[in-house]
Image 1 (cartoon, rainbow, N blue to C red):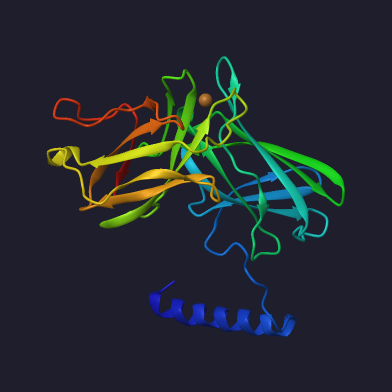
Image 2 (image 1 turned 180 degrees about the vertical axis):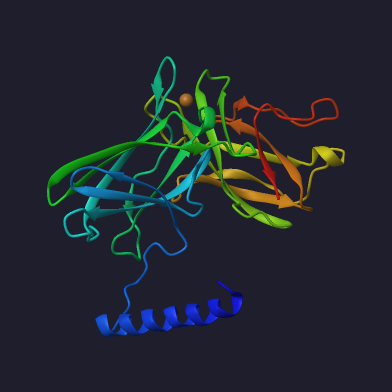
Length: 282
Ligand SMILES: [Cu+2]
């Protein structure tokens, strides 16, 4: 089709669709998944569970996830479900889960439910993970499960380490999602690997922060603030000063509630990177 014909056809399509909408209903329905992209439909005989993120993908690290459940018989979205989920990675010799939140109704939505999952690793080509959704509608219990793809993040935004207390910890960078040349709010999630399935939040520790630019003499930045536990968010909050764009290593130390350093070291001329770190590039 020639270009000069395309614009009139598009305009025509626009007008016809608008006028037919006006005939059907006075108020257009609110799009509850605006700015979200579907990752996957997980289905069973009765329902289709739509899983959304901002990017339309799952990545290693922290994932903010939205869910809605469609009734397959009338294509209506469920407004009062109780939802739980179970992410699982099948490895060669064992299975394990990962840190996750509860799933709760999005405060300003009728059909949308929210939570987060922190995938601490992924397999070849993003393989290995599955996601099971358990939910109750009208006192009836259901579940649906499918394999999912978890894409490897380019930078280390999540790390699993063993502390001097012989405990396995998972740290995940949650904020900033869009770092700026400024003093940024930084949020980290800290979880203990109690066993393969249980990853409870660790409270009242301290995470010290020393951001460095390895490409520029490993310089640091002023006005950083170590991360402290925020009981309301159940996460750790601090300040991250980024004085220029580029690649930064966030050197960390994990200190428990008795002031014992569990992991990580100070940065010196001869020790240029902590054994506990996360990365940012922007
Ligand atoms: Cu694994």
